[in-house]
Length: 538
Image 1 (cartoon, rainbow, N blue to C red):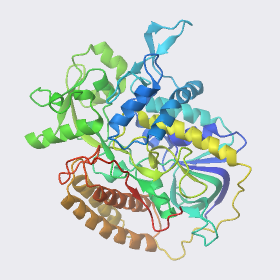
Image 2: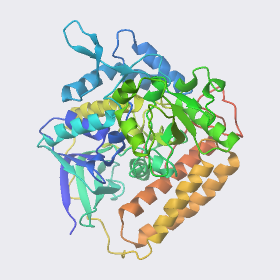
Image 3: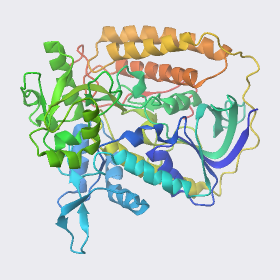
Image 4: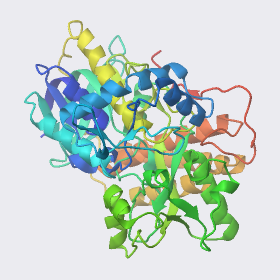
């Protein structure tokens, strides 16, 4: 039997952004944090590199801002970049206060007798400013925040909960546009429960699962972006999908990302014959921004007809490699690759969704009462290409900003009155789930082939035709059969894919992560691609 839940704040997503917001809110608020699988299934847990912030006396806010603007291909919103960077130190201090065990630099003693934190450097950065916990920063942050969250009696953590759709006043036929809650599938009971809340936060991550090859976990299906679009929110810059240059190439190594920090510590990209190739593409070589490195690898693989290239750090001391990259070392060793002696076979894979739901500096969407934070959102920070390790920083800065904004409104917003049950009276159980599996596979394959690292008008037109057929099929299936996690995710992925294709077709230039053979030049004027839904609430 379906259940009704009431909370002050409903957080959909249990990664860095969602947990940070929940922990930053006052302890008297009733907060629910939903995870559509196990709590550790999100992208945060698997992040290796670290968090970019201005922490060293030789670094400056201006330098971090300039690096971000340069990597963003002229599309970053400078106010968003400056806002994020200016709040970076306090965000890191908050993480330290929570107990995150960042790696310390035992070579440099502080005047107070302690030790400085070790900072590394990644592509696009002019300074060492990446604070990290060895090469498992995401796990260290997530485990710490989860422990703190579990200690808070006012925060309810609910696993195996898949958000189906947002509940708004407009959808209920009421006057107004406010978000009142969400319908959520309980995977354990099979029922769709009703959650009402004064404030709803989308912290569902990105949509890289729309591609056949991705570094992301299975849940990165663009759920928050699709739900927000259906609720009346604009989306922005969804044509900019970042492909991480270096994912482990091995038939048994599912979605294992080889951290960019290896290149920051001197790892070199090489062809099968041992030749370096990055200096031919960019003067920054292996430390060029990710879009340049990914395109260079893609070019060399197609030029030579090879399955992968190689990332070699074996020239560094073995003890140094094992100390700084224990996760990569152990994981590669499982597949018979000793990175202290051998290069790592790598290929690009879809990694990060730079666009998302349009928000302001407080995380507000176009729908009152609805916030979007983290990879789900489009803040303007990343522009046409996200600079390494700015993404986790964005999660913490905007989650804390959104929490402060919610606190400022607490006296003005009351809990919604009773919301109607999910109506499943007209649907039946499906006996044709093979359709879902087939459509899922078809979608991810044509997105990889037609809307990947290099695009053309013809490829995009083919993708647009295919995705519209899929949307019709999925809509019919959704209208007639009971919802499941696979169906919900497929519906959301197809919607976000269609938005990505539309965005790419509107950009008649090559800029950052969007590279098209039909428009190889960059236009003089940089403009965001903003799509407005039929039910836009602005």
